[in-house]
Length: 167
Image 1 (cartoon, rainbow, N blue to C red):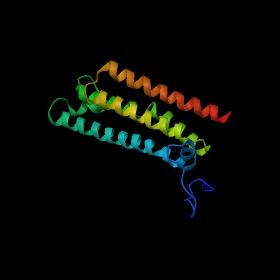
Image 2: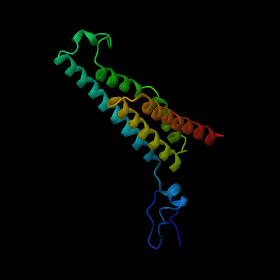
Image 3: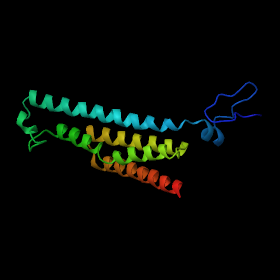
Image 4: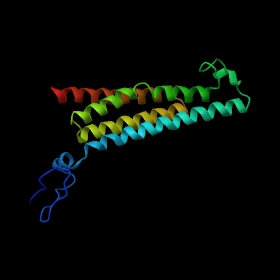
């Protein structure tokens, strides 16, 4: 069986693709840019949470649960828990994920993106989404804590893999 000469090249006549489950296929045919899909999902989710923060603030003011002045300097005592939770979640999405964004860019510009990198990126994003859903709904502290810790373990694994790929 003749295999295509270069990655990202369609097979010529007479050439065939290896089975998709093979390691060769994953390394040879995965586009490095695919690592930016989980990044995009997390960035879009962050923007949606920002819209949610604004919506919850407006609804809280309109319903009379809090005066408009409560948001003059961020948040004041007496702001409803659902508004505080959305705001905290938005802030959380601007903290640790920055290290994720930097790691992904570092993998990409150093040509170190592998299927494992993409998988870890998706796992990190999934855990951050779970963390957000917990914080925005039940806000069960232990469930949120486990999602937070697991996402940070994945992030640390990404960084360790990056450093090891450089040495």
